[in-house]
Amino acid sequence: MLAGCIGFFASGCSQSQPAKQKTMKIGVTLYDQYDTFISHLMDTFKEDVYQLSEETGETISLEVMDAAKSQSTQNDQVKMMIERGCDVICVNLVDRTEPTTITDMAEKNGVPIIFFNRELVPEDLERWDKLYYVGADAYQSGVLEGEIAAEAFLASKEMDRNGDGVLQYVSLEGEIGHQDAIVRTESSINTIMEAGIEVEKLGYAIANWNRAQAKTQFTAMWTELGDRIELLLPNNDDMALGAIDALKTLKVPREDWPVIVGIDGTSEGLEAVRAGEMIGTVYNDKEGQAGGMLNLAYAIITGGDLEAAGLKDGKYIRLPYEKITEA
Ligand code: GAL
Image (cartoon, rainbow, N blue to C red; front, side):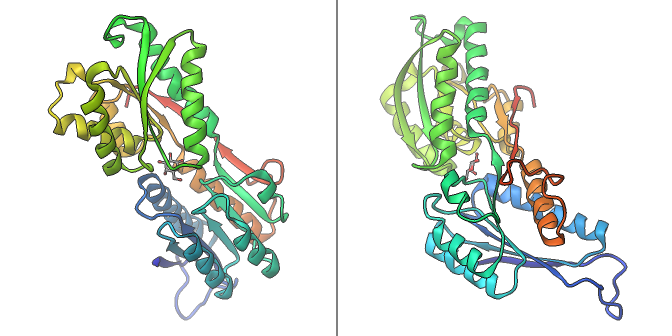
Protein backbone atom coordinates (compact mmCIF):
# COMPACT_ATOMS: atom_id res chain seq x y z
CA MET A 1 0.00 0.00 0.00
CA LEU A 2 1.35 3.40 -0.91
CA ALA A 3 1.21 5.91 1.91
CA GLY A 4 2.66 8.77 -0.08
CA CYS A 5 5.24 9.96 -2.55
CA ILE A 6 6.49 13.48 -2.12
CA GLY A 7 9.05 15.53 -4.00
CA PHE A 8 10.69 18.40 -2.14
CA PHE A 9 12.23 20.98 -4.40
CA ALA A 10 14.67 23.61 -3.35
CA SER A 11 13.17 27.08 -3.32
CA GLY A 12 14.50 29.17 -6.17
CA CYS A 13 14.51 26.23 -8.61
CA SER A 14 12.14 27.27 -11.35
CA GLN A 15 10.86 24.82 -13.97
CA SER A 16 13.08 26.37 -16.63
CA GLN A 17 16.13 25.94 -14.37
CA PRO A 18 16.22 22.33 -13.21
CA ALA A 19 18.40 21.50 -10.21
CA LYS A 20 21.97 20.63 -11.18
CA GLN A 21 22.29 17.60 -8.95
CA LYS A 22 20.46 14.40 -9.66
CA THR A 23 17.34 14.00 -7.54
CA MET A 24 18.05 12.17 -4.28
CA LYS A 25 15.57 9.41 -3.64
CA ILE A 26 14.79 8.19 -0.15
CA GLY A 27 12.36 5.32 0.36
CA VAL A 28 10.63 4.59 3.67
CA THR A 29 8.52 1.57 4.55
CA LEU A 30 6.54 1.52 7.80
CA TYR A 31 5.43 -1.54 9.76
CA ASP A 32 2.04 0.13 10.37
CA GLN A 33 1.20 3.68 9.38
CA TYR A 34 -1.57 3.80 12.00
CA ASP A 35 0.82 3.32 14.94
CA THR A 36 0.67 6.66 16.79
CA PHE A 37 4.37 7.04 17.60
CA ILE A 38 5.45 5.95 14.11
CA SER A 39 3.02 8.29 12.39
CA HIS A 40 4.27 11.24 14.48
CA LEU A 41 7.88 10.23 13.77
CA MET A 42 7.11 10.23 10.04
CA ASP A 43 5.44 13.66 10.17
CA THR A 44 8.66 14.97 11.73
CA PHE A 45 10.78 13.17 9.12
CA LYS A 46 8.79 14.65 6.22
CA GLU A 47 9.15 18.12 7.74
CA ASP A 48 12.93 17.55 8.11
CA VAL A 49 13.27 16.41 4.49
CA TYR A 50 11.50 19.57 3.37
CA GLN A 51 13.82 21.73 5.54
CA LEU A 52 16.94 19.96 4.26
CA SER A 53 15.86 20.45 0.68
CA GLU A 54 15.36 24.17 1.39
CA GLU A 55 18.73 24.50 3.12
CA THR A 56 20.86 22.56 0.63
CA GLY A 57 19.08 23.50 -2.56
CA GLU A 58 18.86 19.82 -3.49
CA THR A 59 15.80 18.06 -4.83
CA ILE A 60 14.87 15.20 -2.54
CA SER A 61 12.15 12.77 -3.45
CA LEU A 62 10.61 10.83 -0.60
CA GLU A 63 8.49 7.73 -1.09
CA VAL A 64 6.67 6.41 1.98
CA MET A 65 4.86 3.07 1.99
CA ASP A 66 2.83 1.24 4.61
CA ALA A 67 3.54 -2.49 4.98
CA ALA A 68 0.31 -2.84 6.99
CA LYS A 69 1.94 -5.39 9.34
CA SER A 70 2.92 -7.81 6.56
CA GLN A 71 6.59 -8.74 6.17
CA SER A 72 6.07 -10.10 2.67
CA THR A 73 4.37 -6.83 1.61
CA GLN A 74 7.34 -4.96 3.06
CA ASN A 75 9.81 -7.17 1.16
CA ASP A 76 7.93 -6.36 -2.08
CA GLN A 77 7.99 -2.66 -1.26
CA VAL A 78 11.76 -2.67 -0.76
CA LYS A 79 12.16 -4.53 -4.08
CA MET A 80 10.02 -1.89 -5.79
CA MET A 81 11.96 0.96 -4.19
CA ILE A 82 15.26 -0.55 -5.35
CA GLU A 83 13.86 -0.87 -8.90
CA ARG A 84 12.70 2.75 -8.79
CA GLY A 85 16.24 3.87 -7.99
CA CYS A 86 16.07 4.80 -4.29
CA ASP A 87 19.52 5.80 -3.03
CA VAL A 88 18.79 4.78 0.57
CA ILE A 89 15.83 2.89 2.04
CA CYS A 90 14.65 3.37 5.63
CA VAL A 91 12.96 0.24 6.95
CA ASN A 92 10.71 0.02 10.00
CA LEU A 93 10.77 -3.79 9.98
CA VAL A 94 7.50 -5.62 10.47
CA ASP A 95 9.18 -8.74 11.86
CA ARG A 96 12.51 -7.93 13.44
CA THR A 97 13.58 -11.56 13.14
CA GLU A 98 13.06 -11.61 9.35
CA PRO A 99 15.34 -8.98 7.79
CA THR A 100 17.30 -11.30 5.49
CA THR A 101 15.18 -11.01 2.32
CA ILE A 102 15.62 -7.25 2.55
CA THR A 103 19.31 -7.29 3.46
CA ASP A 104 20.12 -9.78 0.67
CA MET A 105 18.32 -7.62 -1.95
CA ALA A 106 20.00 -4.48 -0.63
CA GLU A 107 23.49 -5.97 -0.76
CA LYS A 108 22.96 -7.45 -4.22
CA ASN A 109 21.87 -4.05 -5.56
CA GLY A 110 24.24 -1.92 -3.47
CA VAL A 111 21.44 0.06 -1.78
CA PRO A 112 22.15 0.97 1.89
CA ILE A 113 19.41 0.30 4.42
CA ILE A 114 18.69 2.28 7.57
CA PHE A 115 16.52 0.18 9.87
CA PHE A 116 14.69 2.20 12.49
CA ASN A 117 12.59 1.81 15.65
CA ARG A 118 12.25 -2.00 15.45
CA GLU A 119 15.68 -3.30 16.28
CA LEU A 120 17.09 -6.39 14.65
CA VAL A 121 19.69 -8.56 16.35
CA PRO A 122 23.33 -7.38 15.92
CA GLU A 123 24.25 -10.48 13.85
CA ASP A 124 21.71 -9.48 11.19
CA LEU A 125 23.03 -5.91 11.11
CA GLU A 126 26.55 -7.28 10.63
CA ARG A 127 25.60 -9.14 7.43
CA TRP A 128 26.67 -6.21 5.25
CA ASP A 129 28.58 -3.02 6.04
CA LYS A 130 25.88 -0.72 4.62
CA LEU A 131 23.18 -1.73 7.09
CA TYR A 132 22.47 0.72 9.93
CA TYR A 133 20.06 1.17 12.84
CA VAL A 134 18.50 4.36 14.23
CA GLY A 135 16.45 4.14 17.42
CA ALA A 136 16.66 4.44 21.17
CA ASP A 137 17.83 2.35 24.10
CA ALA A 138 14.84 0.26 25.18
CA TYR A 139 16.51 -0.57 28.51
CA GLN A 140 16.80 3.10 29.45
CA SER A 141 13.09 3.73 28.77
CA GLY A 142 12.08 0.95 31.16
CA VAL A 143 14.48 2.21 33.84
CA LEU A 144 13.07 5.73 33.62
CA GLU A 145 9.47 4.45 33.74
CA GLY A 146 10.37 2.38 36.80
CA GLU A 147 12.06 5.36 38.46
CA ILE A 148 8.95 7.53 38.06
CA ALA A 149 6.81 4.81 39.67
CA ALA A 150 9.31 4.07 42.46
CA GLU A 151 9.73 7.75 43.35
CA ALA A 152 5.94 8.13 43.60
CA PHE A 153 5.58 5.03 45.80
CA LEU A 154 8.38 6.11 48.15
CA ALA A 155 7.02 9.67 48.33
CA SER A 156 3.42 8.89 49.23
CA LYS A 157 1.70 6.23 51.31
CA GLU A 158 -1.50 6.68 49.28
CA MET A 159 -0.19 4.62 46.38
CA ASP A 160 -0.05 1.56 48.66
CA ARG A 161 -3.82 1.42 48.70
CA ASN A 162 -4.18 -1.69 50.92
CA GLY A 163 -1.29 -0.61 53.17
CA ASP A 164 0.53 -3.96 52.96
CA GLY A 165 3.87 -2.38 52.00
CA VAL A 166 3.83 -4.27 48.68
CA LEU A 167 3.23 -2.63 45.29
CA GLN A 168 0.56 -4.60 43.40
CA TYR A 169 0.87 -4.00 39.66
CA VAL A 170 -0.24 -5.09 36.20
CA SER A 171 1.47 -4.48 32.87
CA LEU A 172 0.15 -3.86 29.37
CA GLU A 173 2.69 -5.06 26.86
CA GLY A 174 3.44 -4.22 23.21
CA GLU A 175 3.94 -6.89 20.58
CA ILE A 176 5.36 -10.27 21.52
CA GLY A 177 9.00 -10.37 20.45
CA HIS A 178 9.43 -6.58 20.05
CA GLN A 179 12.63 -5.38 21.77
CA ASP A 180 10.86 -2.40 23.37
CA ALA A 181 8.11 -4.60 24.84
CA ILE A 182 10.43 -7.27 26.24
CA VAL A 183 13.08 -4.94 27.61
CA ARG A 184 10.75 -2.23 28.96
CA THR A 185 8.60 -4.75 30.83
CA GLU A 186 11.67 -6.23 32.48
CA SER A 187 13.74 -3.15 33.21
CA SER A 188 10.85 -1.07 34.60
CA ILE A 189 9.97 -3.59 37.28
CA ASN A 190 13.62 -4.41 38.04
CA THR A 191 14.21 -0.71 38.67
CA ILE A 192 11.30 -0.59 41.12
CA MET A 193 12.65 -3.62 42.98
CA GLU A 194 16.17 -2.18 43.02
CA ALA A 195 14.71 0.89 44.76
CA GLY A 196 13.91 -1.50 47.63
CA ILE A 197 10.19 -1.86 46.90
CA GLU A 198 8.51 -5.23 47.17
CA VAL A 199 6.23 -5.92 44.21
CA GLU A 200 3.47 -8.35 43.32
CA LYS A 201 2.43 -8.93 39.73
CA LEU A 202 -1.34 -9.35 39.54
CA GLY A 203 -1.52 -9.81 35.78
CA TYR A 204 -0.47 -8.73 32.32
CA ALA A 205 -1.91 -8.53 28.83
CA ILE A 206 -0.59 -8.01 25.33
CA ALA A 207 -2.18 -5.01 23.61
CA ASN A 208 0.17 -4.49 20.61
CA TRP A 209 0.89 -0.80 21.37
CA ASN A 210 -2.75 -0.13 20.59
CA ARG A 211 -5.20 2.09 22.49
CA ALA A 212 -8.38 0.20 21.59
CA GLN A 213 -6.86 -3.20 22.41
CA ALA A 214 -5.55 -1.81 25.70
CA LYS A 215 -9.03 -0.55 26.58
CA THR A 216 -10.47 -4.03 26.04
CA GLN A 217 -7.68 -5.76 27.94
CA PHE A 218 -7.74 -3.35 30.86
CA THR A 219 -11.53 -3.55 31.14
CA ALA A 220 -11.14 -7.31 31.66
CA MET A 221 -8.33 -6.79 34.19
CA TRP A 222 -10.34 -4.25 36.16
CA THR A 223 -13.39 -6.48 36.16
CA GLU A 224 -11.27 -9.24 37.70
CA LEU A 225 -8.97 -7.26 39.99
CA GLY A 226 -10.58 -3.83 40.53
CA ASP A 227 -8.81 -1.44 42.85
CA ARG A 228 -6.37 -4.10 44.03
CA ILE A 229 -4.30 -2.73 41.13
CA GLU A 230 -2.06 -0.04 42.60
CA LEU A 231 0.17 0.53 39.58
CA LEU A 232 -0.22 0.10 35.82
CA LEU A 233 2.97 -0.19 33.79
CA PRO A 234 2.13 -0.02 30.09
CA ASN A 235 4.90 -0.25 27.48
CA ASN A 236 3.67 2.96 25.76
CA ASP A 237 1.35 5.96 26.11
CA ASP A 238 -1.30 4.66 23.73
CA MET A 239 -1.85 1.61 25.93
CA ALA A 240 -1.90 3.86 29.04
CA LEU A 241 -4.57 5.95 27.32
CA GLY A 242 -6.55 2.83 26.46
CA ALA A 243 -6.58 1.88 30.16
CA ILE A 244 -7.69 5.42 31.05
CA ASP A 245 -10.49 5.10 28.46
CA ALA A 246 -11.54 1.88 30.22
CA LEU A 247 -11.54 3.52 33.67
CA LYS A 248 -13.65 6.39 32.35
CA THR A 249 -16.09 4.09 30.56
CA LEU A 250 -16.41 1.96 33.72
CA LYS A 251 -17.00 5.20 35.66
CA VAL A 252 -14.34 4.28 38.21
CA PRO A 253 -13.98 7.22 40.65
CA ARG A 254 -10.63 9.00 40.19
CA GLU A 255 -9.49 8.17 43.74
CA ASP A 256 -9.70 4.46 42.87
CA TRP A 257 -7.57 4.67 39.73
CA PRO A 258 -4.19 2.98 39.82
CA VAL A 259 -1.07 5.08 39.32
CA ILE A 260 -0.20 5.06 35.60
CA VAL A 261 3.15 5.84 33.94
CA GLY A 262 3.55 5.88 30.15
CA ILE A 263 6.32 5.86 27.57
CA ASP A 264 6.57 7.95 24.33
CA GLY A 265 5.37 11.40 25.31
CA THR A 266 2.88 11.60 22.44
CA SER A 267 0.76 14.74 22.44
CA GLU A 268 -2.18 12.77 23.90
CA GLY A 269 0.16 11.22 26.49
CA LEU A 270 1.47 14.63 27.55
CA GLU A 271 -2.11 15.88 27.76
CA ALA A 272 -2.91 13.01 30.17
CA VAL A 273 0.10 13.97 32.32
CA ARG A 274 -1.12 17.59 32.31
CA ALA A 275 -4.60 16.40 33.35
CA GLY A 276 -3.08 14.33 36.19
CA GLU A 277 -4.38 11.07 34.69
CA MET A 278 -0.83 9.71 34.37
CA ILE A 279 1.85 10.66 36.86
CA GLY A 280 4.44 10.80 34.11
CA THR A 281 5.77 9.48 30.85
CA VAL A 282 9.15 8.84 29.24
CA TYR A 283 9.89 10.90 26.15
CA ASN A 284 10.78 8.85 23.08
CA ASP A 285 12.72 11.39 21.04
CA LYS A 286 10.97 11.25 17.67
CA GLU A 287 12.63 14.52 16.59
CA GLY A 288 16.09 13.11 17.35
CA GLN A 289 15.34 9.82 15.63
CA ALA A 290 13.87 11.45 12.51
CA GLY A 291 16.76 13.93 12.35
CA GLY A 292 19.36 11.19 12.94
CA MET A 293 17.87 9.06 10.19
CA LEU A 294 17.84 11.93 7.69
CA ASN A 295 21.37 13.14 8.54
CA LEU A 296 22.63 9.60 8.07
CA ALA A 297 20.74 9.11 4.79
CA TYR A 298 22.06 12.43 3.48
CA ALA A 299 25.65 11.62 4.48
CA ILE A 300 25.39 8.19 2.83
CA ILE A 301 24.03 9.64 -0.42
CA THR A 302 26.50 12.53 -0.59
CA GLY A 303 29.53 10.49 0.53
CA GLY A 304 29.73 12.54 3.73
CA ASP A 305 31.23 11.66 7.11
CA LEU A 306 28.88 9.16 8.76
CA GLU A 307 30.39 9.66 12.22
CA ALA A 308 29.83 13.39 11.94
CA ALA A 309 26.20 12.49 11.17
CA GLY A 310 26.08 10.77 14.57
CA LEU A 311 26.89 7.16 13.66
CA LYS A 312 28.59 5.10 16.39
CA ASP A 313 30.47 1.81 15.92
CA GLY A 314 29.82 2.10 12.19
CA LYS A 315 26.22 0.92 12.73
CA TYR A 316 24.09 2.75 15.31
CA ILE A 317 22.47 6.04 16.13
CA ARG A 318 20.63 5.90 19.46
CA LEU A 319 18.80 8.80 21.02
CA PRO A 320 18.33 9.09 24.80
CA TYR A 321 14.95 9.00 26.52
CA GLU A 322 13.83 11.61 29.05
CA LYS A 323 11.56 11.50 32.10
CA ILE A 324 8.52 13.77 32.02
CA THR A 325 6.49 14.28 35.17
CA GLU A 326 5.22 17.75 34.41
CA ALA A 327 3.90 18.55 30.96
C1 GAL B 1 8.04 1.92 20.26
C2 GAL B 1 7.00 2.93 20.71
C3 GAL B 1 5.63 2.31 20.56
C4 GAL B 1 5.43 1.78 19.15
C5 GAL B 1 6.56 0.85 18.75
C6 GAL B 1 6.43 0.41 17.30
O1 GAL B 1 9.33 2.50 20.34
O2 GAL B 1 7.22 3.26 22.05
O3 GAL B 1 4.63 3.25 20.87
O4 GAL B 1 5.40 2.87 18.27
O5 GAL B 1 7.81 1.50 18.93
O6 GAL B 1 7.50 -0.34 16.88
